[in-house]
Amino acid sequence: MQIYNAPLRDMRFVMHELHDSASLAKLPGLEDATPDLLDSVLEEAAKFITATLLPLNASGDAEGCHYDNGVVRTPKGFKEAYKAFTEGGWGALSSAPEYGGQGLPESASKLVEEMICACNLAFGLYPGLSHGAYLALKSHGSPELKDLYLPKLVNGIWAGTMCLTESHCGTDLGLLRTKAAPQADGSYKLNGSKIFISAGEHDLAENIIHLVLARLPDAPPGVKGISLFVVPKYLPRADGTVGPANGVSCAGIEHKMGIKASATCQINFNDATGWLVGEPHKGMRAMFVMMNSERLSVGTQGLGVGEVAYQSAVAYAKERLQGRSLAGAKHPEKPADPIIVHPDVRRMLMTMRAYNEGCRALGVWVANALDRMERLGDSKERTEAEDFVALMTPIVKALFTDLGFESANLGVQTFGGHGFIVDHGMEQFVRDSRIAMIYEGTNGVQALDLVGRKMPANMGRSLRRFFHPVSAFIDANGADPAVGPLIQSFARNFGALQLATAFIAQKSLSDPEEAGAASTDYLRMFGMVALGYMWIRAAKVASEKLPSAVGEDAEFYKAKLATARFFIERLLPPAGALLYVIKAGKAPVMGLEEAAF
Image 1 (cartoon, helix red, strand yellow):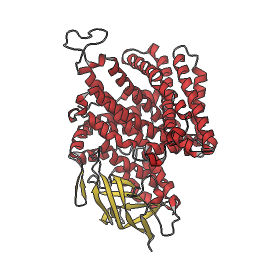
Image 2 (tube, helix red, strand yellow):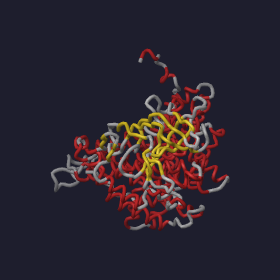
Image 3 (cartoon, helix red, strand yellow):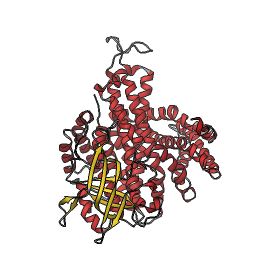
Image 4 (cartoon, helix red, strand yellow):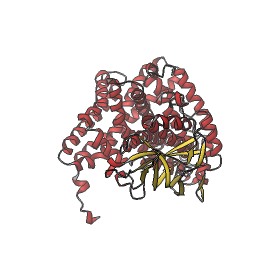
C-alpha cells in the first residue's frame, strides 16, 4: 500500500526556521505572504492532494491512457480530479495575479508541487507543463499573446505543452526539421512531427496550447536558427472562446516503463497555424525559460517520489515481523521483531530520510532565489540570485532525480519480495521515477551544463554564490560546541570540492574531454556537498531550538540532529572521495578504442 502524509512539520522548518520566510514579505508583491498564510496554504494543499490524487496513483498506473484514432483519454477519475484541482487554484499558486494567479512565493509553490509528485507523479505532469508554458509566454510573448493565453493557462481551462524533440534529434536541437512559413496576416504555417510530448493530447482541458520549436525559411543552421511558436490545438475566436480545429493531430501515444497515466504523445503539425513567440531565430532563449523551470520541477519529482517511497517503507518496516534484533528480542511477546530493529534496514530508511530532507532544504533555498530574481529590479542582489539559480538548476535536476530513484529502489529493498510485486505499489515508484533522470535533458547533459557552462560563466562568478556563504558559515560556526564536529567533518568534504573545481578548471583549458569525463562525478560531489551545507545549517538551528523545545517539537529537533549526523558521517564522505575519481582524468574513460566496444 502506498502511504503518504505531507511532511508539514519539516516543510515549516525549512521555510521558516532554516530559510527565514519572513524575509520574503520584503519583496515586491509578497507583502502578504506571512508565515501563517503559507502554513495555511500547505495544510489545505496537503488535505486536498492526499485525498484526491493519491487514490488515483496505482489505479491510473494500472489503467494507463487510452488512444483511439487520434483521441486520448486519461484514466478513470483523472478528469474529475483535474477539475477539482483547477477550481481550487492549486496550479496557479505562484502565477501573477494580473492573469488570475495567487502570486505566492516559489517556495510554497514548490512544496505543494512536491506533494503532487509524491501522490501522483503522472497527474502532476499535466498542470506542470501548463505552468511552464505560462512562464515562457509571460517572459517572451507579445501583449496580445499574453492577454489571450495566460489567463486560461493559469486557471487550467487550457493546458500547455512544449514540443522540442523529433525522432532524429533529442538533446541536439540544432538538427530539428519542423518548418514555419510566414503568412500575410502575421501568423505562420507549421509542418513537422514531434515525439515524446508529455500531455500532448488528453481530455482534461478544452484546449491544448503547444509551444513549438521550428525553423523559418531564412533560418541559419544549428540552434541559432530556431524560433518558438505558440500553436493551439483549437484556434481561438476573437472573443477568446475555442474555435475550429487547427492542423494539430496526435499520431499515437508511447507505451512506457512508468508514468503510464501521463499521455506521452507523437504530435503532427500539418499546416497548423501558429504565432511567433519572441524574436525570429531566438527561440531557444524563450524556450529555456520553460525548460529551466521544468528542470527544477523535475528535480521536485525526484524528491516527491523519494518521500512517498520513504514513508511507505517506514510503515512496512514497523509492521513486518522477521527475525530477532541482534541485541536481543525487542518484542518478546511477538513471534518475531519488526524489521525496523535491524541495522541494515535502519541504514536504508535513514538514507532515504536524509536524502529527502536535505533535498527539500536545498530546493527551498533555490526557490527563494527564484523569487528574488523575479521580483527585484536591476540590482546586485538580483544578479546574485540569477547566478545562483543558474548554477543550481542542473544540480537540482540531476541530483534530486538520482537520489529519488535511489530512494525508490531502497524502498523496494526494504519490502523485499513484497516490494517486487505490484500489490504494495513500491515497484511503481521505481518505474515512475526513472524517467526523471532522462527527460528535460538527461542527467549526463545536466553535468555537462554544470562544468561546461555554469562553472566557467563570467569567470566563475556563479560559483562564488555558493562557495562564499559556505566558507563564511564554516568560519563562523566551526568552533560551536554543539555542532562544531559536524561542521569540521563537512569542511573536509567542502575542501575536496574546491580542489576538484580547481582541477577541472585547469585541465579543461587544454582538453575539453577532461571536463566531460569528470562532469557526472563532479555534479554528484557538488550536489552532496550542497546537501551537507543544508544539513549543518539545519543542525545549527536544531541545536539552538532544542533546549527550550517540548513535546513534538523536542522530538523533531532531536531527529533533525540525528539525521544530520547520519548524513555527514555516513553519506557525505563517499562524495568527498570523488576527488580521487575526478583526478584520474579522462584516460580511464577514453582509453578503450571505439572498435573494441
